[in-house]
Image 1 (cartoon, rainbow, N blue to C red):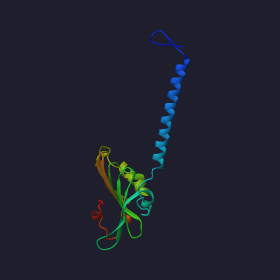
Image 2: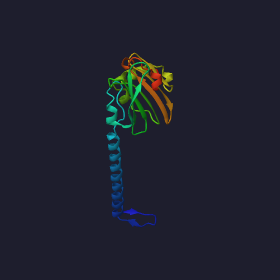
Image 3: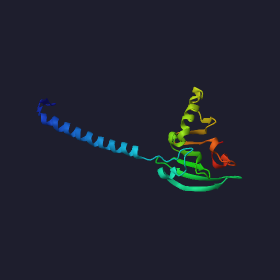
Image 4: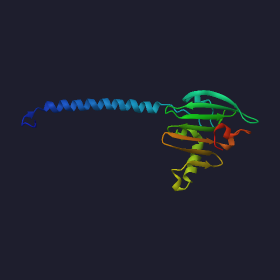
Length: 182
């Protein structure tokens, strides 16, 4: 038995009742935690990978505008697929007549999942970032390798960037006119 402030004894049932309420409250919180984790895991990505098929964007994102056909100066036809992911990041995916994404540009309140966005080019991107001087970790990213060229900058709630694979860019395409930094 427990002694309260006035010298009275409280029965063990009081403890059991409070223990039961605490246990029930924990069950409710655990249930909400499980639902939240399941929603995060099940949330689809919103981007086709650089070098992958452009059709992948429509399967895993919410398209704003489906495949605008753009005429590049002189030669190739370029399609622009604009996709918005669940966090509100807008991604433009540029693909040539072969249907392969050769360039991407993004802007939004958060940085998108670059591992998914860059696909097989992500390891090269990471290696390029590691090769930068240690003092430049907060500076804008300007990465140029034979496999990938990437630019990214921004601040809290306003991030933007672009990347392209030089080997995949169709002949005659002006990247600057697409909004991709060359």
